[in-house]
Image (cartoon, rainbow, N blue to C red; front, side, top):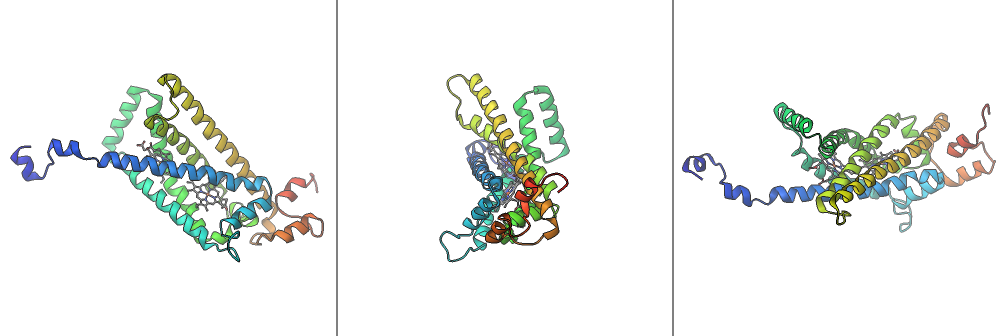
Length: 273
Ligand code: HEM
Ligand code: HEM
C-alpha cells in the first residue's frame, strides 16, 4: 500500500484478502435460510392439520400454548416462539440486503450479465431476490398478527381472519413467494455445500433440480388446498364471525343437537340446502 492510500484510510490488498467476514456472513445467511426453511416445512404441516379435522387443528394450536404441560394454555408462549422466528427472519433479511443492487447502475450491470450468460441458475438467483423482497412485506403482516394475537389461532378464529378479515390475498401471495423462495434457497444450499450431488456433477445438478421442483409443487399444492379449506370454513362461519371454537360445542353441533357450522357443514351441504 502506498502512503497516499494509507493517508486516505484505504485498506491494503493483503488486509482485504485476509478478511473472513464476507465468508462468515454468507455462512450465517445460509444457516438462517436453512433454519427458516425447516421451520416452514413443519409450519405447513401444522397449519394443514385443518384438513384432518377442526379438532386436530385446535389440539395442535393449544399444544403450542403448553396445554400438555400446564394447567391451562398460555398464548404468550406462542408469542415467544414468534419472537424467535421474527429475529431469525430479520437477521436473514438484513444479511440479504448486502446482495440487493444498491443503485440503478448495479441493477443494469446485473441484467446485462444475466442476459449474456443465459444461465438458468443466474435467473433463479434473480427470482430469489424478488421473492425475498416480497417476503419483507407479506411475512411481516402475518408475523405481526401472530405475535400480537396468539390466542386467536384456532379453526373458527383462523378461518374468520382469512375470510371475514380479508387476509386470504396476503396468504395467497405469501404462499407463492415463500415456497418458490424456499425451494430455490434449499437448491442453492445443496449446490453450495455439495449435498446429495454424487460422483457425476451434471447428474447431481439434474437430480437437485427435480427435487427443487417437487418441493415447491408439493408445498404449493398442500398450501393451496389448506387455504381453500380455511376459506370454505370462513364463508360458512361468516354470519357468526368472531365466535370462538369450543370443542364440545362443535362436537354436539355435529351430533345434530344444533345446526352444524364450519368445514364439515360446508362440505356436507347439498346444493340448494
Ligand atoms: C425478508 C425476507 C427475506 C429476504 C429479503 C430474503 C432474501 C434472500 C436472498 C437475497 C437470498 C440469496 C442469497 C444468496 O444467494 O447469496 C436468500 C437466500 C435464502 N433464503 Fe431468503 N429471504 C427472506 C426470507 C426467507 C424465508 C422466510 C426463508 C424460508 C423459507 C428463506 C430461505 C432462504 C434460503 C434457504 C436461502 C439460501 C441461502 C444461501 O444461498 O446461502 N428466506 N434469501
Ligand atoms: C412462529 C411463527 C408463525 C406462526 C405461529 C404461524 C402461524 C400460522 C397460522 C396459525 C396460520 C393459519 C392462518 C391464520 O391463523 O391466520 C398460518 C398460515 C400461513 N403462514 Fe404462518 N406462522 C408463522 C410464521 C410464518 C412464516 C415465517 C411464514 C413465511 C415467511 C409463514 C407463512 C404462512 C403461510 C404461507 C400461511 C398460509 C398457509 C396455507 O395456505 O396453507 N408463517 N401461519
